[in-house]
Image (cartoon, rainbow, N blue to C red; front, side, top):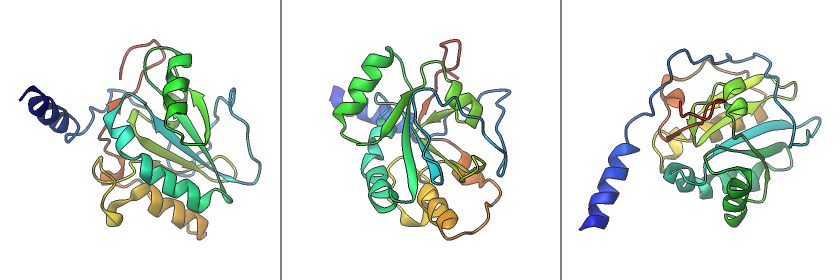
Length: 191
């Protein structure tokens, strides 16, 4: 009974959008993003796909198979990196991430700086930068947390679009509304 109530509470919690922080500054499509590269190597000539991930966030765990598929299909053309967010310190975040076997580089974003410069305010979400570090896409993997509808696999659709040479589109209202866990801000509080 308690397990069922817990599941219903969690399902309701993550089926409504994550609150958008007041004063959120988000760079627009085509804008250059100056990343804090410490802890992550830059692969020149490749697109950069940042996977914002919190190992404690159920929504982040729901899309693991989806991100694995994207990485398997596009690793030769795209540099994938996980931006780990959450609480408990960098060692705990790295250990939790490593146990998942995602097999990609990761950087710990304990202070929220990576989220701040890219305009991300929740996990899981994706940021796709072109070869000149200009924003091509920022948003959700799917319309819901389950990544189950191919028609609304926003991150995959945009990744395939940039690989096909199409220009960035204006931000989609449905792709930019986050369903997930809020990120940690620089001062250690949640957004």
